[in-house]
Length: 277
Ligand code: IPD
Image (cartoon, rainbow, N blue to C red; front, side):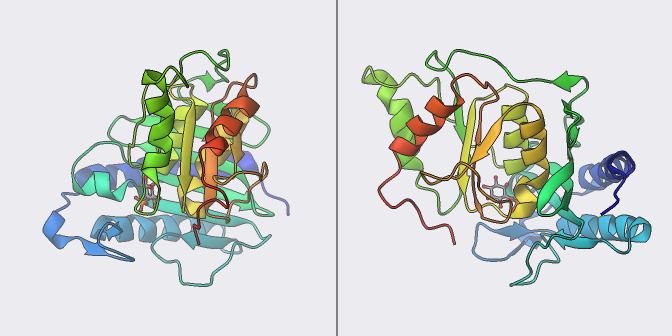
């Protein structure tokens, strides 16, 4: 597939900025919010309007590419080897509805099921993260791996979902008081894409979540790995998860100690792991 990554990147940045204006201009009302899978899986008119806008612009420019978006996804649709735009119009919909400003649009292009361009934009903070395969990750300047010693105090953040066993990870934090593992604290911030970017930027060291969809993670995945971080399976054992596997753990961007951090996390997961299907 001949794809000009830089051209796609520039388009996705342009689309993300315009979509960000739509998000900020919208006034979500909790009463007008719909649900999808369960009462915590929210969708607003803005999620849908932003996705329609994204489709119009990028399908206009790249009509031959596939599109996988959170709001237009239908059960059974699979990521293929074809160049595919992957879109989460609002990652952090619960935050958006509650006016907690940790919200972003996440846009990626995947080829052969691997992200090659990723853009994550939080319109409230105006932080724009982006990456092109092989060319590093950028915030307003190149972001790099944070190189800290593996066992020194570090902050662990986990995403918390309705099917995430939070107490398991609280053990890591609790261990501090018991003279065990040194963890500053846990966070649950409500946007998978922004969590990946925070790990990429060295603001936090680990992000763990099971149950994410490709649109939650595709862009952040590339931004993280281009910054020197790694993504492994949320359950123990698999060091090379796939984008559409719905299980991921983003590990701090320090090459030294990455393995130890992963194994430390995996060690508190119950035998057999969790079922994220
Ligand atoms: C959700 C957020 C949340 C994560 C969920 C995602 P959405 O995305 O990223 O942090 O816990 O797994 O589905 O629904 O706001 O686009």
